[in-house]
Image (cartoon, rainbow over all chains, first blue to last red; front, side, top):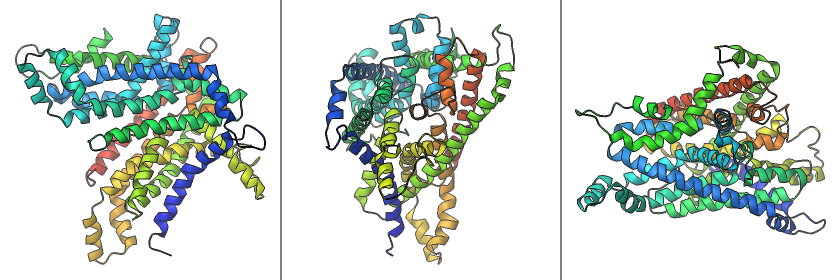
Length: 259
Length: 298
């Protein structure tokens, strides 16, 4: 028995827990036709108009979430570091609250609180609620990413330099701060993207035609297509995380936080 | 309005004379959090102490004592505890193996990258993956049958243990992501010091390693507990979210869709119970994190 026996055993155990379900899902997704291995299930999914619609709906929602989240978080993180450093723990605390309030409680509270207002009575209103809750969910990742990014540049000097050249706050934010935290912002954005694309609870309970609810519905009528969707969804998450690690190379940006 | 009072009350930051307008810079953030998180949550908490005529009452809280609700809470708590322990153990051992266990370096980065993906791979697609693996027609189920082991009907993916196996899939990577840096924070000098004093490997772990890591391990497991307790989509996909739904999150979700029929006060109280448990969990996690920060450089 070698010296590394136990570490190898734990590694193999963990690796098989990770990989066996993925392999099985992939294998299963290829069995749409009896007696042959085929990508027919994938073709069926990709041809489905509802797939295209729900996927692009979630894509738009994810982009809207990222834009709103960035517009809220970058100025806040900048201002807190520049002028209100003592407020930092408070802001951090509020960004972490989504971990205390689970998604299902959040959507329940929103639906109850804003019932019989334009926010729940119209299609557009519900979408605003959806994006709003996703933005809140993205705060922990976005804030940490941007805060770390801001700390690696000298915002005091940059701000003074810009001011001495006559720049106002909007110019400083848009032309000095945003470009400098671009990389950190991207890593927060990709993790937000991964979360929003697969999110089911909030979208389903707000009756939104998103990708998560579409996947859920498909399972009641199809056998092999859901596993094809699971592989597609895994690939999407993998691509988003790979993008974070790729852009994070050589910078301080790291994969932020749990989940 | 409620949005403004939030920021005004938390505003002790102008030391100099005269009114400071600096806090205006954080108004958008706090307004957003207030509108989409704080205000709705607080209003639900408040309403769980009000009856339909808006009189103060404890009736809603008392209604949580109904057998099916108690059963759901117990089920959720057990599921979270089992998967926190199972995922914590497997994830902790995996993190140990690839950090200080002496396995080749590339395995460490592979496991860390994969954990980043897998911890985000939950909900509906994860349920699909396990149906294809351990469902009645699943690949592993069929393979086991071909070697003479029949999982069904003794086992079901839709049972407590089935659900636990699925949850552990997203618990392991979370444990790995948090524990790997903590394990790497263990200083080589501690090992060397104990070895030079004649301690065996077992003694090192028993008297030095584990006591140092314990707050960190427990803290992360508490976080895993909360992670499972708040999970909804995975359980919904597997159990179908029927009214006999055995997880608390599914009961709450069902309260939204069946608004007209059900008792609104009960839904509020259910949500309150959930927030209280999550609050205690995260509080405990924060406390344990602080304790572990004393020894480990992260």
